[in-house]
Image 1 (cartoon, one colour):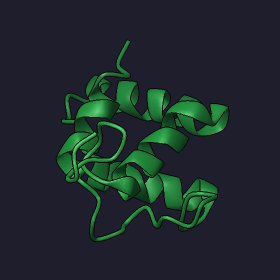
Image 2 (spheres, rainbow, N blue to C red):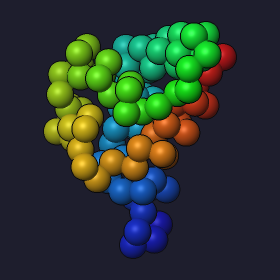
Image 3 (tube, rainbow, N blue to C red):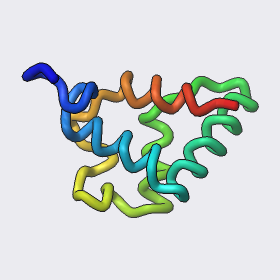
Length: 87
């Protein structure tokens, strides 16, 4: 782990959001369905759009208090993580 990263992610906030999306079953299922539906509509996967779904369904932040729209989130890294969820 370098001083610029957190567990291989850009920072703690990005890691925390990715952790919950990938490890909380309801969030994971929501993400997989959203990604596949988005791709089915021939649209690009983008965390900035997906975060609105998270806020609607799960509140404004992770259980650890990181907001889905936190200014320090690495949106490109989260978008890449989401794209990897496609079937």
